Image (cartoon, rainbow, N blue to C red; front, side, top):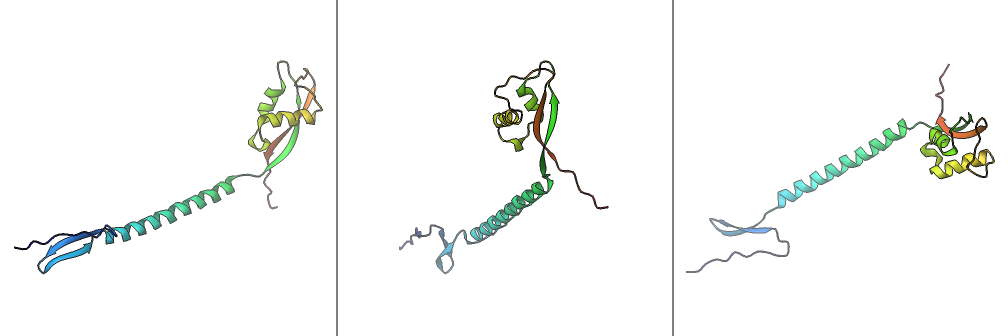
Length: 134
């Protein structure tokens, strides 16, 4: 009696041998799965890509343009340069220490020492006013 041996094709690794009435037939096991997986991956990739660009556009629309202005601040008792800088600091100013140095340059200060009753010029960023059509 002769027995048939099931062989596997290791070149692709996705074949399976199935017994039919007319003998053994080799069929591709994951053909439908790979086509569906590829299509699903492409759809998911395009969805994520469109979501990424949509959020970037919305963030750009919500971002208001900033304008650099100055304010004159009267130094109160207990104030120091760093506390005043913290009140007006924003991300547009760069690093905090650069912002403090900019305040010092604006007021021709050589050290962090300030005196009560004096005035400081403090640059800061503010939103641009919206222009309305009249």
